[in-house]
Every structure is written in structure tokens, then in C-alpha cells.
Image (cartoon, rainbow, N blue to C red; front, side, top):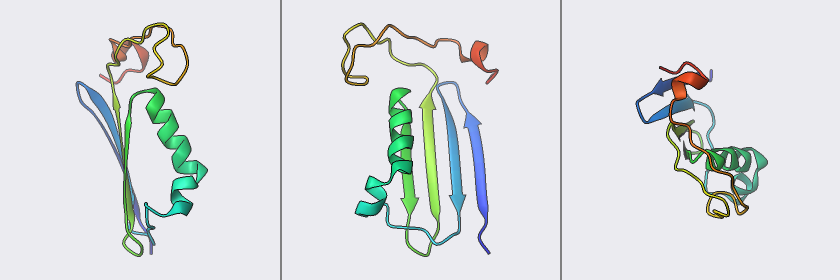
Length: 103
């Protein structure tokens, strides 16, 4: 029987999420997984908030997905194409406690 575990945590600089299971697993390097919209969408959303996604999985050995999102983001300036390939307006989130009660 498959079991899953979800854990979250917050530190001064980042929030973390870990989701794991003891299911059938998969090869994270396979073309089918790399082209799948699920992981592409997760990576894209995390890129927009300067987060990280790590995938640990092996066939028949389960899967663990770890996500880290920084609480302070660098200031993006107009015409800063490093963020998303388009012009970006200035943004800074200095006090996450005001925006969601993470403290």
C-alpha cells in the first residue's frame, strides 16, 4: 500500500515544502517526464518567484519532491530580462509576515 508524506517549514530566509511517497517512482531524466506539463509548470512557477525544485525518484522506489522559495527576492528593475525574458516592474517582498502570516 502506498503512503505519502507532506511537510512544510519556514525559516528566516525561505519556506520549504517536501512531498514524498513510497509508490512506483519514475526516472526523472526520462524524456517523457522532462516534457510533461506537470513538472514544466511547477518549474516555471518557481522560477517566477526565484524558487528551487528538486526531484528525487527511482523506478519502484518512490519519489520525493522538494521545493524552496526565498522570502526575500532581489529587486527587479525595468528592462531586467533575467527574470522572465520580458521587462519587469520593480518588486520587493521585504516583510512576508504582512502578506500571509508566516511568522
